Image (cartoon, rainbow, N blue to C red; front, top):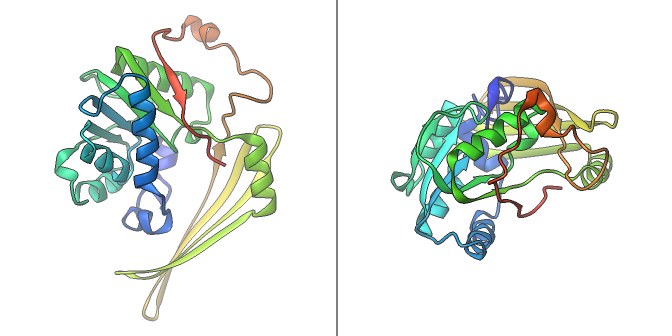
Length: 247
């Protein structure tokens, strides 16, 4: 995850320890799809790969087990603490840094950025992120990223604006609730989240309200041309591939 607003979310901070329980994913199958995508573009399993916004490291570790030399980058110290405790984490190099302002470092054969770009609300931050990708990629490197699709997201969130999940954890019973309102004018999701942790007779409530962008490359008005923003041009060497859109 990235940025001050994102890391302020209990999901990425004080409740990072429960992230994987609250957000279950078919990591093995998804990494199989990612590996096939990279292979189809000439990136072999022993290639260097940056997982940009690695979170708890579950994708980074899975890809390392498939032979990639993985570096995981995230702005949340709490998520990285969870990642470093994951079985197999010793095969991954984890770095604390903001995706928009990544540190200077080695170049990679591939970059994976999934479930992260929608946290960037400002056009300038998005451009900075892609400039960071360009600086971090080898000349023939491949970028794999995903974004939400507005129409599909709008239909689902209109039908199911509330998501709630309760899990039993080592710290007690944890209930996560997310309420989403669609802002059609800005194509943003207005989200109210809360975590409620009950340990014996004690209940702790952690509420938060924030915005989430929906970046859709296929539909809607074209975004401002990045090569006109502050006189900066997009790095043409990028070879982006959006493997799957999130709905």
